[in-house]
Image (cartoon, one colour):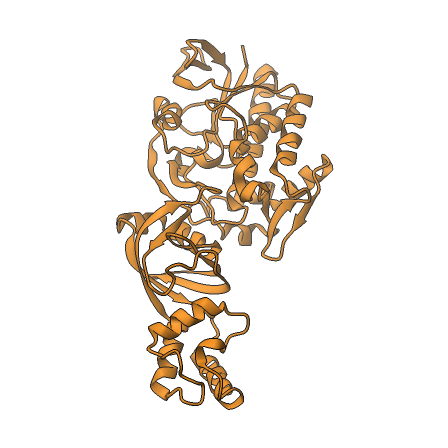
Length: 411
């Protein structure tokens, strides 16, 4: 039998299994319901795998988590992005940091990350089985656990790590529920917005590199991308994570306020418009935005929405029109009427209540010998490598704690 069983072959499960084996833990076996292990690693970041984020101060790193910010402070002092980078690079997986702080493998290929993890797991004697879902979990009278699988097997474990990558499905929720753990209900955390609006209609692929988006009291900044169905990009995904529960409560119907300038401000923008009038008075307004490198097609649509005729020149643009154009750039209002999951980073908020977990070890406070790691916990991050980092951190701490507890049991 596997003395340590990990339910879930994703990032947290694999890292936890490796950490347990590295720390001298006994036989470790991973059970994965799907046809492959590390499936999210494979598809994340457009197939490049956003391993973590270049934020190496625990308190700053923790700010990337709308749920779990305070709870992760202690764990991040033990294992954070710096340790993650060192771990992968010491095993031959060279990493690079992009301008926005996201860290990717130099290969730009998630398969090299998967190869690194599976190679290390094999070297440590970790085994894994795919297409092997767990249908029930029971606590044994004398301690330990009895697991029933979809294959009709019964497996015994002295320690159990649940790392089911979220609780969207009943199968993912079942291990925690079988063992008496309450769960915060799941709702999508990273998603894009459905917007039907003339200003962005027919402009898929158009992007603005630095914008600010707001919904009620929520605010996020970064690139915004126009899609076939509305708006996406890092700023939108950050906002969706920050407001996951609030926006779900509104059934994803709300007003989005969009500052396309990224915080230039009204005074600076009006001055930029005045400069266009002075320097390029004979030019048509729609041919040149007052902002550098602003997409022309989007600028044309914003001018149209502001009531600026196609033949209006900068010299003939009146004060009212100038203010209307500025309002479109600084505070465009868009009606959001639904959402789509972000396929590269499908994340939910919700999961095992953190109050029921010892965050120094990731062990359940309710069931001795039961541990949790990754998205099954009520922890989720914004886009940019934060969700993988919490998986590496909680998996590492759980794996080491499992090995230590088993050593103590034999002394």
